Image (cartoon, rainbow over all chains, first blue to last red; front, side):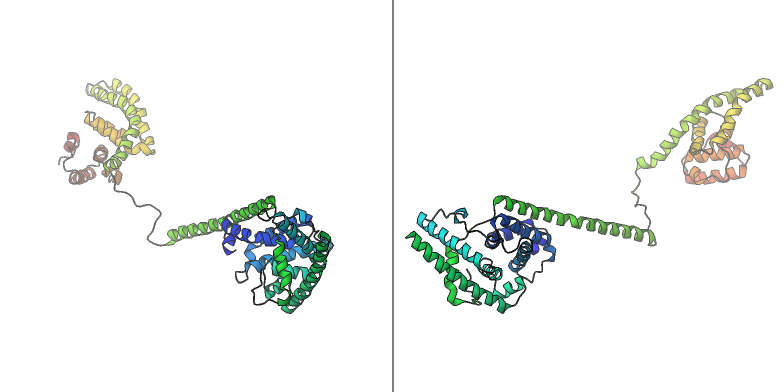
Length: 179
Length: 238
């Protein structure tokens, strides 16, 4: 990031390649599909414009998701929390190396996860995604969302518990239906 | 994804996290979004470079201005570049310019000089009337010579006079026409043998014989091998 700040375009390319997928999924799990591209794009544009404000002491990943969190909060303010992701596994890319049955199972699991994540409170959902997709530590998540470490730990605990319950219910139902 | 991290808050819910990884979420931004963001980053990088240019230009201007001020104010320095050793061609250039500038004067002086000996002969023969007529022709040329002394080519007049003198023209008439007598001769005149001799001739004509003798002595010291015209030598004989 420091090199990009000094005018090296190639440094941005490396950063972008590393973080584009996780960041896109961070938004895809929290906003309607129609808005994901805009949110993703807005985050990177803000990062590009604010490159001079980047402090090398902070990890780039945390800095990026701090901007992303801010973009998401702005989005919720405009559109409300009703803007939820829809479960649509047919739109997700299919793993060509896997067989049809594996793809079906993965698609079913993705569909169940999207539905389960959509049912979580926004704070718990974001904490889970920052932990799983962004790979942030509890301290970094706390810094990104502007709260304490224990609060984040609590959100993660409740969030994952509810996810587990939702997944066991949905997957068991799906499996039964499939059988 | 982060199962090995020390801050694992919920080891009992590892099952959920494993399920998330197994789901294989791999959705990525569409290509046109990628292209847009990359283009924005490139633009920003270029803009970043352009942002520095005004600062660099300002710094260069300040440095140049300071350098100029210091050069002007520090003692013992001037803005004239060190001159190269003059070549023979460079040394000859002023003389060539003088000769070029003398050409128009020679055009004026030649007809007048051709008439002067005739006037002298007529006077000697007692043909006063004829001489007066010729004198009327010469008069404008005489009047033109002092006026021309104010022009840059005035210094070249003695050269023309010297050339005419070597051709046998009477130095008295030429001297009066070409340049007024100056006492002593100027540095510019002394830098050139012909100019210096013309100055001496003018002093003779102005009957400044002591000054002319003094100049001739100095001339002989400076240009020992240069031939002194007979009329000057004769006029200044003790």
